[in-house]
Length: 281
Image 1 (cartoon, rainbow, N blue to C red):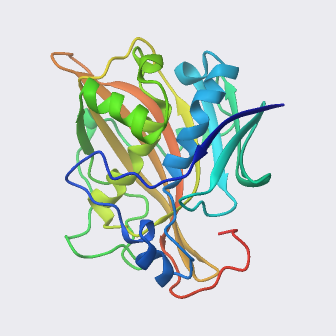
Image 2 (tube, rainbow, N blue to C red):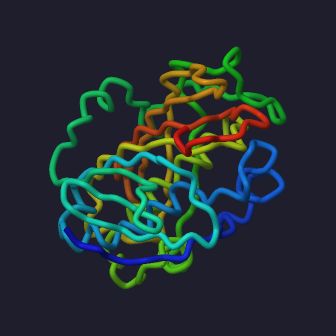
């Protein structure tokens, strides 16, 4: 078991300047849903563990996998410590587990679930489902079983370095020849908001399989394609489960390269005014 890095939790602004932080990430919005302060974004929190896992498993970010679930909300100012005891990976605050997960090499144990629900590649999209601007996703209009609009973002080296340093609190030079795993996972959120107007949302869990993330440079278009797999109610919260694929295409390249497959679970409609007695979602 290793006690690894510590990070004082914070809420960074979106790197994509066309987007803004949603209500759950500011104090006023979070209090509406019964929390005492703004929740720190789930992908941001998990990204603080990436460097420690990669140190323990050098090939992990190339062709490895991870699963993580949030047991408690992380607030700005919490000191988050990563504890690696492979395959177990925990993130704790004052010794209490806030994020529970696993990591390993090779084919993920959840690969069958991913394979059965994959959205098409960007070049094979024939139709997409999305909600009109201003219409938020609900259990009634959720496009279950449908492929959503793809989300494209041109990733420069400067943007990737900024993500590593500002979001993941990681050294950009460590990721000069591959994309930061936290960045790849982060592509799900704007992809969902692009089609479903799903914010504010609370990140519940993620399972990710990394693919072909070797000798990959920034300065390329990153695309996320997503299929909504499930929508359901649980304890007053409305959940969505999604299968996402993240692709890269460098300028002049004839084809896209698949970089990651992701199973993402979120609460797209938190119950209003609840007072969590435990942090379990």
